[in-house]
Amino acid sequence: MAQLAATEKFCRQLFLLTSLQDGQPCWEPPVDLLETDGELLVYVVLPGAKADEVDVRVRNGELIIRGRREPPPELCHATVIRLELPFGRFERRIPIPPGTYAVKRQTVRGHLLIRLCKSGEGETA
Image (cartoon, rainbow, N blue to C red; front, side):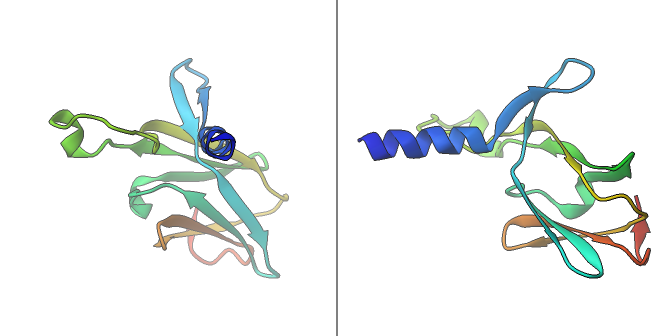
């Protein structure tokens, strides 16, 4: 039981609840940030998110990822037994190395993959 409680506590910490500058609540999706010679790779845990519906910007040395994850439509007519995946507004700000980047987005195995290309090829954020 202690291990189960510790695991549940860890899962709750993955999706931190914060507030935006306007005071509205939001949650922060967890990320992995990797760097290669040509790009920064950002894997964002956003279950069910569509890459083109997530706002991605690079501003003042920060990668800003924001959007909204809608609840499943069945939630309106179902009894909730367990609800662990957050929905609603989200925003994540990640400091990145200085530079000019172009942004490419795709979904990979349930993650949103953001490629920040150092060469400037792609959609500029």
